[in-house]
Length: 141
Image 1 (cartoon, one colour):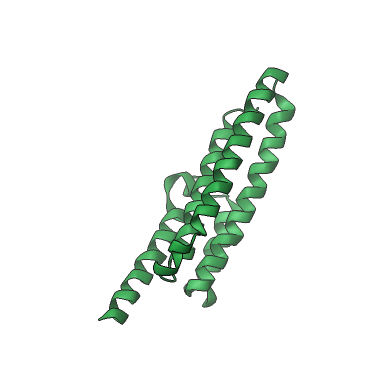
Image 2: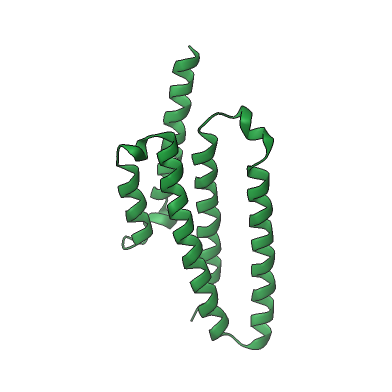
């Protein structure tokens, strides 16, 4: 029965990871090359394993983090000095929160949560960075 339960948890976690890549905010931009690349990765035999799901998600996270940093740079070049100061402070605080959250995610508690905790956490990290990208787009020209 435990094996069946583990299989069900693994399958549901896989669906959660895929659902993040199919949410309206993510799927709304059909030309999103990061989403397309992640989708291809998930469809490979390796992408269907727990480690593969984690790796595919992490690659997407890294790509979105790079996109966020590039957008931040463009925003900072396009706004007035007072706005730069406020946006810089907000970004620094967001990064501090993100880093603290990642440290919490890597705590000892994970040892008891099973192998699907890793892809689930990567999916949540993707969601967070995508949300921050949306927030920064509000300031972009």
